[in-house]
Image (tube, rainbow, N blue to C red):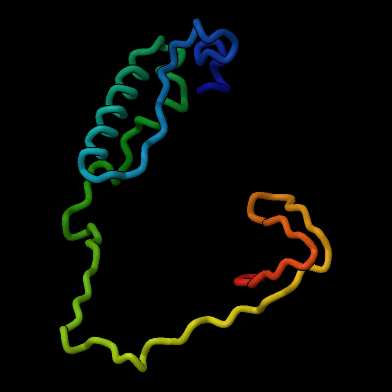
Length: 135
């Protein structure tokens, strides 16, 4: 919609914006977050369909609100995949021999100074010893 209606979306002048803003969803917190998002989406849809006809009746908006065959048959509880939980009996505790030992890392010495070029790297001085976890 922003590309189709740059004036109404406020791309040219923010004061002319009439297309509603849809905030990005926050991290999922549970039922309350879902209910808040549902309210936000309801307000957005209401504002969208009440825009001038050239926007609210454009092909993208009409297609978005078009009823599809799956809409007429909402999913049932039996179709929703529930999380699986596996419980182990108390006597199934692992023996101390089942625990692996520590990982032995390869150690390297820097032969020259190195300046990091990205945030995932680290700067080194000649002679620094480094344990490499992953190459």
